[in-house]
Image 1 (tube, rainbow, N blue to C red):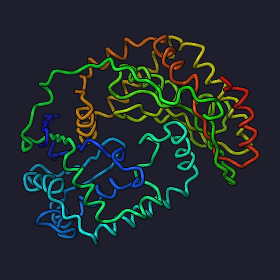
Image 2 (tube, rainbow, N blue to C red):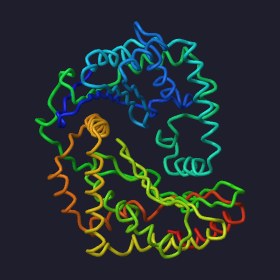
Image 3 (cartoon, one colour):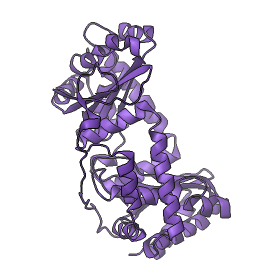
Image 4 (spheres, helix red, strand yellow):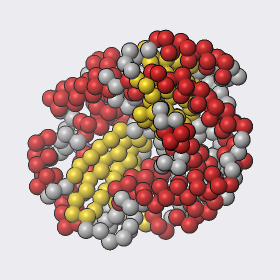
Length: 407
């Protein structure tokens, strides 16, 4: 049974339908990390009445798009076409989800593609550092693992195991949303909005400061630094204050990170905050990349910034600007119909219904500096740190970490 929703978001000459299946890589068994990504790719490689080539040609003949993606807590499959062709393409979603072919030949292709992607992923020092950071933050939790899996697990996955995983897949909750009335469902605009006061608890919060530090040897001239912690679910009332903090730290050239590391000191290649939407405790990660010669200076700057976040509330001008920038990003995200539908169906699967722009802005306006300071102390007083750099730098930063973050 698929729960259906309709969103009449202005008049467009194209239609999109997006299915969200509850449960993504978090459904992977411990020894089969990556199996749901393989299954997801396999679903779109043929269904009842359409083998792989026929399905691809049929979709392309109408100038349509079929996309799929695996997240930690869901799978998204989307089809998009001009309005006049949509009725011919919409039935494909039902066939793909409920009657896929799942052929062994296509399985071998998808498995090889996953192996190639894992190999490519490992060539990137940033990805390796992020994976190490996630492991110390989340331990054995599903969010500790990449959705593509790992080499050992993926290499051992068999076609029969994917077929068994599909039986599990058929029992998961599914939701579909579209801007086209062909998807006969509940009008999202008429549904009462739901609020939540869920408060998240932090796992591994009492680990010793050295258990919250790790590093990877990287003999290039680049040092990558990551610091942060798991925070809250999208359902939590703490979500928006943390987004205001993210805005303050990383949105645009007026952000605290940009001004400190680039404008004032000019020492970073890349920097920002990673804080995605998740049904469980989402990561909040500050990352930056510097040359080896600037690594120790960057660490000290970051330590000072972190201490300031824990001790001092944002001043009124900083808070106002952070809120305005956050509102601006929400407006930008509402320009793309695909993004609107994807976001809405994901939130619905979490048990939420999106707020109107007016309600969202009022919630943001109500956030105070003390609200944010309270959350920084809750989530970031005992952060997790990971560095990718040469051995000498890693050991020196380890020593400084013990001094600066000994709580």
